[in-house]
Image (cartoon, rainbow, N blue to C red; front, top):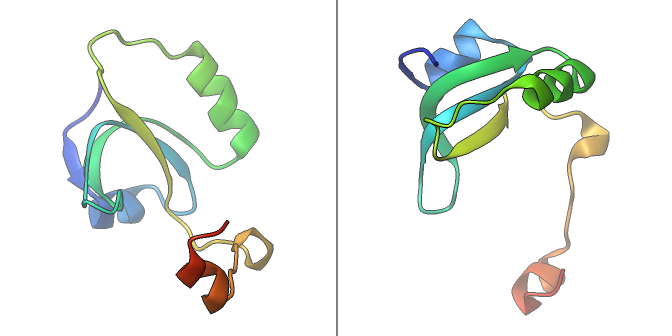
Length: 89
């Protein structure tokens, strides 16, 4: 089972610098998260992966994961404007 629906702002405040798994998330048409029901959370990727492997709830039809902190500089993928305009990846 999972907790009440929380907005992204509430999730960031309650679980700072954490990976969270959201059940039945809501998002914009650009797939930016708006909120969801927090199923589990962890401060490290290893712990998050372990918890996800153990988690099973057939009532959850859709799930998404979300990082509540700022991205590390080396995790940001940059693309030049000419690549973005051409649609190439």
